[in-house]
Length: 136
Image (cartoon, rainbow, N blue to C red):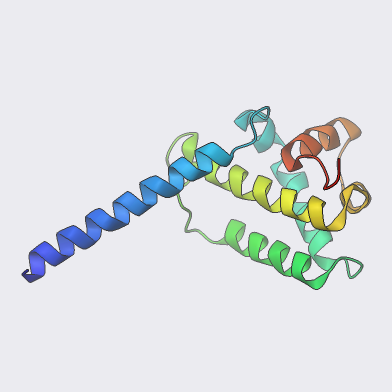
């Protein structure tokens, strides 16, 4: 196999892996939450993640996941570029939803309520996004 074939096959493999990740993200998306609802919550969600990441009452592993999430959200590189209409932000919403589910399961709903900076109605949407706490 020559150099050009190797580059083409490697590129095809990367595209296939990217497609598989997109399908996984689509499958893992919160079913009841619309993308529009999630995008309206973005400023409060960023504040929530920052507050939870700084909360020393939470386990260290939870805080590390939250700092990694903030880093992912701040990086200009995404699974789907943000310039792609609708889908560009969908990957961020799914990643935030999965991270919040993990945090709520590990830290409990009380930590979420304590750190929430927005309205009670928006908190209800975030609770749907995060899913039920462990044991419910």
